[in-house]
Image (cartoon, rainbow, N blue to C red; front, top):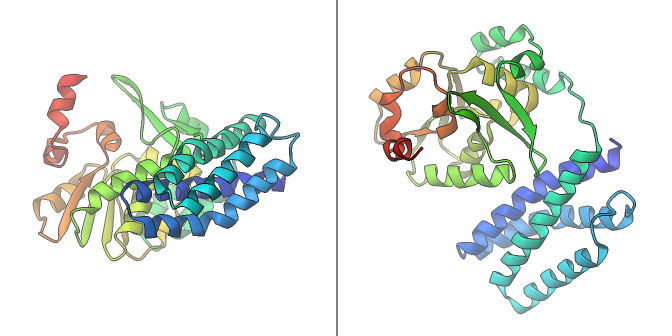
Length: 304
């Protein structure tokens, strides 16, 4: 992959995230926040659209006329102050266009695996949890982990998702499209409790953790993960350094769920236990004590 295409791909990941958050804020009538996200992404959008128009041979399937019409529509909606229309254009046109570009790049390019991300994650993990660092220090080929029934796949936004297999079949830990949007929605739901300390069951690939930290800027977050294979896979494929270097984060390899069970038993009014459902589904041990934090779980189990 040449450097220009790589730059577009990485820029699009950020652009999709900011666009999704702007749409959410428009829908909630938080117009000041929506325009803050738009302002923060303006340079990125200009860069990507300019590259599309200049590299017509590479992006041949993207119609130039539709890109120009979309930009004109955005400008007109802004001029009129029609924020509902503006949100529609961002959601139905801009967001879909960026996703199509990401899918095109993924289809055309190769993404060779390197140990760079793994090494950076371990370096950030060592001062946070030296015992876990020592366990992860001995490398294991990702292919061996993938052969155990896990899957790590690119999504249409350019980020990765994770899947595993249980007795019902394959299931995903994150969306296959707008990964950060899903994580943002989940974190917003959790953050309504206004806790000072969050005990989160499930690392996944870390997206929901990152969003929770961003929304609850002063809260401490304890991450509990019982599946060592997921920890290793995540360290191999996702840059967790922003999470691991955050002084508010505590990372616990909770093999037998003893730590989160204790946290749940000793919970105070300033603390909150929240459960990432796919991680809960992945548990291979007694987990009934977590059911109060998924009040709909019995209904769900009766429906499937």
